[in-house]
Structure formats: C-alpha cells, structure tokens
Image (cartoon, rainbow over all chains, first blue to last red; front, top):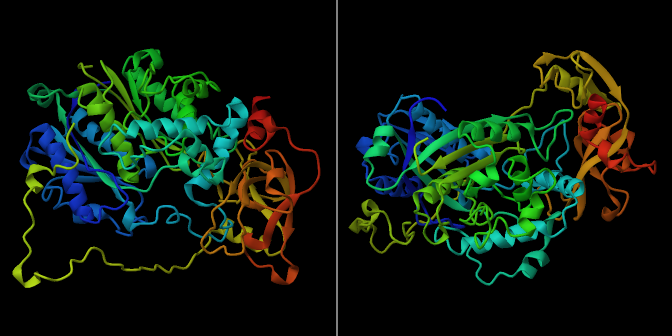
Length: 387
Length: 192
C-alpha cells in the first residue's frame, strides 16, 4: 500500500437505539463527532476536512443532509465530501477519508456515518413501483432470502446455523454498552421459534432498525506518532462493486467480494487470513451472511464457512477468529453508520480500547461492509504496528 | 471504551430554555408527509417491452458480444457497455431460479395473501431472471428449478405493464437440475 501512513486517532459512537427522540439528526452526528474528537484529543480547528456517509436520502426524506449538517460537524468553510454506496456506505466513507490522508491531501480528517431510522421507513422506502416489473419484493429480506436459500442448498449447511449466528451476536452485544439490542434473557430456542418473515429468514435472524452515528478521526503518520493514546494503523483498504443482475452472476459469493478481499489482504501482506487476522467485524444484517462472507473472504473454504459457526470458532468465548464482538449489525443497525461501526470496532480492538468485548492481544483486525444487492464492498485491515 | 450514558464534555451542559417557552410542552417530533409525483418516460427499449406486454409477448435483448439475452430489455449490455438493438421474443415459460416465501404484506398489494412466493423467473431463452409471483400450488411445493408458465390477465384487461402476468404457475414439466437453475445456467453454458 503506497502513500502516507494513516492512523485512526479517535473513535466516537452514540448509543444505538430504536428512537433517539431527544436529538435531531444534527444533534446525533454532533454527539458522535465530539466523542471522536475527545478520544483523539483534538479540537474542531485541527480537522482539515469532513467525509460523511449515510444510506439513501429516501429513508429520512432529507435530501442531501450533508449540506445542513456542515454546521453541526464544524466544517463550514472546510472541504466536505458525501459518499453514497448503499449499506456499505459507512465503510466506503471511512475509505474515502483514509484516501485523503494517504494521498497527503489532508493531515487530519473527521469521518462519520449516521442513520435515524426512527424518522424513516427503510423497509419500504426503496421498494418503489416501476412499470416494467411487478411490485412483489418485500424489502431487503425479500431480496436476500433467495440468496441464503441458494447458499443453504449448495453448502449443505444444517438449517439452524443462521440461528446460531444470531444467538451468538446477541450475546456478544451484552458486553457492548453502545449496542441497540441487549436481550439478556434471549434463548437459542426463542431465536429458532421466532416467526418466519422471509423464509428461510426468521425475525430474530434480522437486524433491528436503529438510530445512531459513528465517527472516526484519521490522521497522517506524524499525527499518529504524536498521539498520547494507542492508534490503529491502516494496513490495507479496498473497495469493489458489481452489477446486481447479470448472466452467470454468483450472488452467494460475488466476484467483487472475492477480488476486494484479495486486494485488501494483499496490501496488508496477509496470506492466510484465518491465521493472521485476530478479530473480524463483518457486515451481517441477516444471520446467514456470516458463514457466506467467511467463505467469500477466504477465512473458510467454499461451502465450509458454516462449520466455523457450528464449532464456535467465531464466538468471543473460545473462538480462534471472533466475529462481531460488538454484537454486529444484528444487534445495532443505523444503516449509514453500520459499515463505519465495523471499521471503528476493528480499530478499537487493535487499540485495546473495546472495553468488555475486547479480545486479548489483537494485533490485526478486519473491518468489512457490503451494500446494495450484495454488490458494493468496502474493507480494511488495521494493526497495532505501522505497516 | 467510553460510557454511552456520559455525554461528550462539550454537550454536558444542560440546554436552557428561554423563559418565554417555560411551561410549554416540548416538541419531540413533527410529521411532515411529503409526496413526489413524477411522470415516467420509458426508454425506447422499455417502450417496446411494455407495448409488447399488451399483446401478451415478452421481449428480450440479445447482446452482440456473446449472445446473452437480457429481460427486461434495456438497450445495453451492462457488462460491456455495448448498445443492443437485437430484440428477441421470449417464451412465457421458464423455471424458478430462486425464491422467497414472504410472510409480510406489501404496501399497495392488498391482493396478495401471505405467505406468498416471490421468485426469480428465468424465461426459456433468457439469461437473467426477473421477479414474479408464483402461485397455483402450495408454497411448500415451490422449489429451485421448478418449471413454470405465465397466467395472463383476461385479454380485455391487458395493458402496457408487466402486471399483465398475474402469476407463474407450475407447468408440471420435469425440474431443471438445481446446478443448472437460475444464473448457474449461464455458467454451465459458458464453462462447458
């Protein structure tokens, strides 16, 4: 990876919840931004530019919200950039911010993703009637259900693997005070018995609707060296995308995903991801995507990802590759922030600052986001040492 | 890790409400329904597609690059950025490439009883699928590779819309093997 060495200097999150009725969108983003600045021990004046992302504007019905958020994010008179890549946007936004440091355009950049689902209708906002097709798809679950069905058919995975992922992530969330869902009394049986929404996807295998924002301050090598607290060094960044419907498309294991993973691990000098990555924050809005991405990203052989779920490899308790120690998207889903949370949690893990869901001795962590019809991908590898 | 219950220092001070507002009920939210009405002007390819639908015909576009057939036709092969002008008539039969059994009602589709099956329908002669409703059998009978045929609206109700096909019903023919269903069909064809 060429260019300026880049470090995560600070991370700031709001608590994720179904309704942050106490704040406006501007108040929500400012809260996360302040926390990131406090963590980085920097002030607004030391920030050169702001890069912001959220899911499509249709959700809250506020078009180009970045314009009115410039004040709340302290960037009046400074460069501001908005990133659009659907559900992967939080990850892509962080990568655009990183690129501004890597390219030496800016020295310190504030980057932030947010969503206020309580003011929106994310299930139906994008299901707009079109004359050349029938109105029949029931939101994202309706879109991903057939892909999961295909994965189950071709991998021969037991039917309850998805429930195991959901139960694991909800237990992980109990150790994360920022997580939306804290279901201390949830049992595995309750997950299995929750209603089918988009067969084979059960209610408890889907992500919640959350309000929230997540911010990071990224800096150049000098800024990283000057930091009093541990920083996370960026070892690799990659984005890829593909069309969502073309002849021969592998929807279960998209080419763009595989190529993105090969690129980011190549930059980080990683040959065997399972052995060389210590912890993973992966975008799993529907439970079955954990084994599917484990395979696509090279942590497991094709058709064997579900075995890592079954044998507990991805559990923070005793697993060799803990996945989504924060509780993941299955426990908090402020859509536009969800990708950035993955990237930020990966950074917190290598900084040793993940609190009660910290994994011991993390040297390299992987952050991942996907979006659209599993067609946009953003990934990074961060480490405790300079690349 | 910071504590979510402790606000950032800069936000820790309580907001002081002006005296003139004292005693008033705080406004927590304001609902402002918005509506955007727009005219849809179909492209040349979409116009031809929709007009053909009114005659119970389904059109596709064949790529000059490798012969792949797209439906609905868009006038372009999105893989290569190549213009397409070869139109082909497709059968109103095909197979289920994949599907979802949905237990949620869809706004604006009060006619659909849950659970219903939304499926990727791969028409005979086409190389990508499009979404369609599968009915005429129990939901648990629907499977990847199941052969289906179109059930059209009565002739007097036909119009330039994909909704002319009420649903797709099992045709009773032998299934397409799972490994050749949906997008796997194209890979099977091109990988040999």
